[in-house]
Length: 186
Image (cartoon, rainbow, N blue to C red; front, side, top):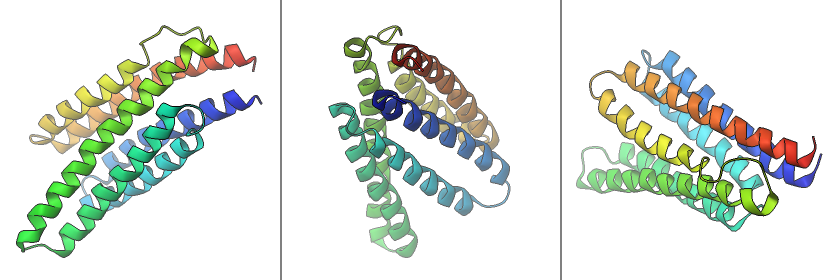
């Protein structure tokens, strides 16, 4: 298989299916325990980090996405673990802010990831509309905001929103990957 196809197709495919699968598992585990869902989110984050690591040499944007995602995981889950250890103290509020900063940094990592994919279209000549892959970033951002708002009323509906959003993103990326496969001749 061509190095370009291997460097782009497999990591994106794995990354998105893992994300979607984790949302479905979180839906099943929701009635039981949020700690399990949080641990599962960490595992999914580490797997996604590995997949983006595989793409870091494809473009500068992918390298930035990998470094930003690494920082986000450190801030988010490091802050979360330290917050649990510091419950009841003034430090726990500061650590919650660190966790929130990690989630914001993850939004930046998503931005680098999807915009880097879009930048790969022109020089490689993929037959995919320029700018469409950026919709994935906006969908994930808007869907995350909607899921957070809906989550205040119903955690179940919030997960349904995330699953639907992930399915649309997978569909858009699947079209992108088909354009990559067509160009690479596989």
